[in-house]
Image (cartoon, rainbow, N blue to C red; front, top):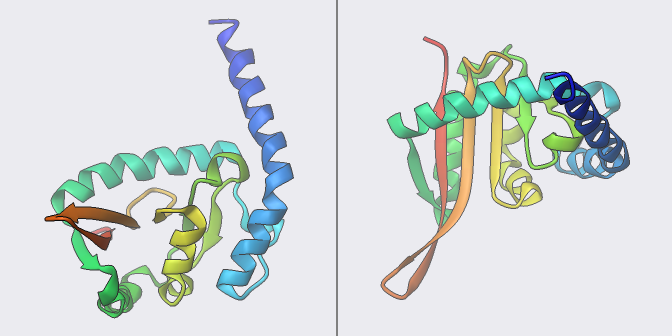
Length: 166
C-alpha cells in the first residue's frame, strides 16, 4: 500500500502537467463556441473533477437505462426545444462540463443556458458527446452523437439523457 500512494500522486502530477500544456488551447476553443472568455477560474482542479466525473458516470449509467430520448440529427430543432423546456430546472444550479479534455484540464464551470444554442459544437469539440452535471450529480445531462446502420443506410442520431433532483 505504501508504494501505491506515490504512484497515484505521480499519475496526478503527469495529468496536471499535460493539462497545463493543453488547457490554453481547450479554453480558447470553448471561448469561441460559448462566445465568452474561459479563464483558469472556470476550471476545476483534477482531484475535484475526478470526483465529479465518477459521480456523474455512476448516475448517468443508471439514468440512461431509465429514460433516454433519441433524435435524428436532421431534427436538431426538436432536441433544442427539449433543452429549452428543461432550462428552468437547471437555473441557479452550478454545472460542470465533462469532456475528453477533463481528464487533463479538469471540468469547466458552465450554465445550462450556455449550451442550448451550441450543444452540437460542444459535441463536435469532444468528438461524440456532451456531459453536464451538478457537483452531486442530482442534476445532469448527457448527449451522445452516434451513427447506426440500418438496411444499408446510415442514420445519424443524438441520444439525450437528462435528469433533475426530485
